[in-house]
Image (cartoon, rainbow, N blue to C red; front, top):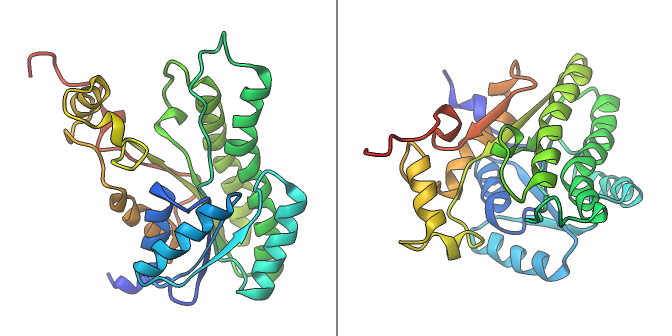
Length: 263
């Protein structure tokens, strides 16, 4: 097998919300495989800081400030990207939010906000990027970022789990409708990763740290770079006959009910 299967040279990838954390790690992986990276966010400060970080990694990133939940802005900026950079070959729907609130205390507006960002926005982004892919007859790759909460429930994350469960099914629907155009729609479901957001709960002795280590067959948190292989695979021609799949990169959590108590 040739490694050319994973070569993304000449491809343009738009990774939404990839100004930090797992999104940035995946975008860096795509860049290392040869893709031109475009990143958006709704925060000017996050974009400026991210640009410096990408440059420090030797990556020429192009950034745009727009809201993925606003269809008018999405249409405008997809056109700008395709006019100013290049047509989009790879879309990674990474932008997302979570609100950890018990259902009895969560307002309907808060529930809807999570669904808007985590489920409706990927629909908006994908349908407008795909319209261009179809008109160019170029094929393309849609990669939605799901979650283990696409499969599991947990206290305080009802809105997030609902959105990510919906995103799993939206991915399958995208695959079903768009495969005829040479477009593959797949998803990645990350497990628990060592990022700046999880740093406070990764301290030795913290209950959540102990829970994750004991719950994960690998016995540790993931490193963000460990998502890069999955996203490169799903963005490359190596996955041209993979469609509607959710690739869980979770250290084995979803494969087990947990380690025996005495182990």
